[in-house]
Image (tube, rainbow, N blue to C red):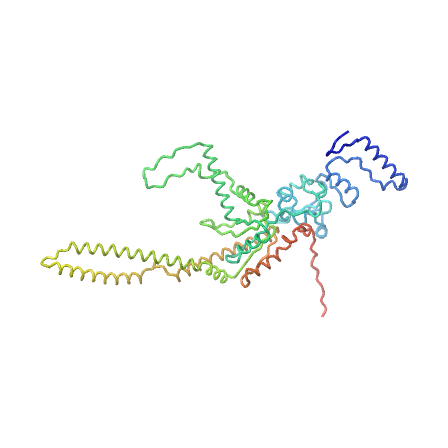
Length: 478
C-alpha cells in the first residue's frame, strides 16, 4: 500500500479495476471499433507532461518536433512567396530565446551591422531571432525554446511585464507623459541615462577597490612642490588595456533593466562634458534590452525654446538679480576701500599755517571733489563694462544653447529611429507632434498608441502571429 497526498492506494487492485474497465469498453465497442480506444501505458511524469502526451494523441495538429536540428531550415530552402505564406510560430515576431532565457520580449531582427532578418523554419513555421547568437542557441537546443510543443505551455503565450520607452525633444513633454503613464498603470519609471551612468561609476569604484586589494597599498612619494596636484595612482585608477568596456557596458545595462518590472523608460540621452557620443541604440541592441515600442515626442524648435523659457524665466531673472547684487556689493566695497585710502592720504598731508577749522574744511573740499570724480569714473566704467550682467544677453545665450540642444536631439532621434526600424527592423517606433496640443490631449493620444501594449496586453504575442497581407493593386472605375 502506498500513501500519496494523504490518500492510500493499493496499486495492484487499482490495476485490476482499470484492466476490467478497459475490457468492458472494448467489448461494448466491438472488434470493428477497437481503434477508437486509446490506451496509454506510459503515464509517468508530471501533470503537464501527461497532459501533453494525451493532447498529442488526440490532436493531429499538435505535433512534437524531433529533438535534432534536421527539421530546421533556412531561407535557402524556400522561395520568397512560400516564406511569406508560411505561418509564424507561437511567439509571432518575437524571439523565443530572449523570452525563455531572459524573460524579455524582443522582436526578431537583423544583427548589429544590419542585413537580413535572423529567422529559421521549423515544421513549416517561421521563427524570428534577436540576433545570430540567439539563432545558433536555438539550433543547438530547439526543444528548450519550443515551449508549447515540448513543454505543454498553454496558448496564447503570456507576455512579460511591459517595457516602453518615451523620448523626444527638450520640452516636448517626455517627463510629463512618463509620470502620467506610471501613475495610471502603476509602472516603474527609469531615467536611463542617469541610472546607467551611476551604475558605471559604482562598477568603476568596485573594480578600483578590487585592484587595490589585489595589489596591496603602495605609498606615493610626496611632491616637492606643496602646491602641485597629487600624483594619480594610474595602476589603480585606470582600467587595464585588455579591459573590455563595451562588454561591461552591456552587462551594466542588462542589470538596470530587470525583466520582472514593468517599466516606462525615459530614453532622453544627452551628451555630458566632452562625451558627445550617442551609444544608447547600440547598447540596447547588444544587451537585448530593447523596448517593445519607442514613442518619440516632437515639437517645433520655436515651441521648444518658448516652453523652456517659460519654465526657466523666473530662475533666469533671479540669477540676473543675484549677479547684479554681487556686482553692486563688489563696487561698493571697492569704493569704500578707495575712499578710506584717500582719507588716510589726507590725514597724512601737511597743512602748515592752517587752523583746525581750515584743515577740516580743506579735507571736506578734497573729499567732495574725490567723490564727484569717483562718481564720474563709476558711470564711465559701468557704461563700458562688457562683463556687466545683461538679462537680454543672458536670454540670447540661453536661446543659442537650446537651439544647439534641439539640433543634437533631432540628430540623435533620427539615429535611433533609423537603427531600430530600418537597420535592425526590431522595434516599433511611433512619433507624436506635441507642438499645438495640451499635455492632457497628448496623454489621450498616447494611451491610444499604447493600448495594444498595456490595455490589451494579454493577447500581444498572439496578435504578433498575424501575417500582413501583401498589397495588391485594385482597379478603380469611375
